[in-house]
Image (cartoon, rainbow, N blue to C red):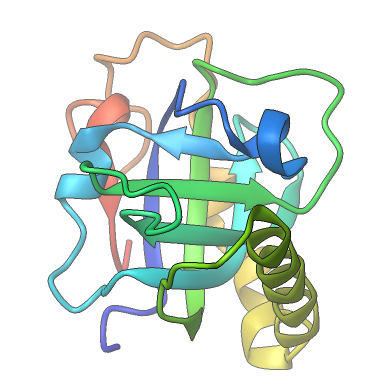
Length: 174
């Protein structure tokens, strides 16, 4: 995929409520405006990369992009699992991510246990791949240093990218 690495950020919104409750794997969801602005060559499936909430630390992440066939969603979503234990939810915060690689296409599963096992396998694969030097360097990218604070109004441009709204901010190649 020629669009990788892909840089994007947006406000964390409430999703379907399944990540933490049903799967035990919490996810942060982007709004439709972020999902709708993905480049055409970013296909559905599971990706790995780096994520930062607000101006916090940068952590490894895995992201599902698509319709989640097990749940038969009618709406495409981007659900990010940050590989870190947070003390509380961060709805309304700005999530900045760099998608650096692709793990697999999305697929359906025969059981919730099989889905959970696949997600955990994706997480382990992401942890290993993100240790590669070409991926490690993106953890320290200036993109994360320019992350807006959630206390800023969402209608104010907060980086040198001159994009008008952080809630709809999509960056690539910053």
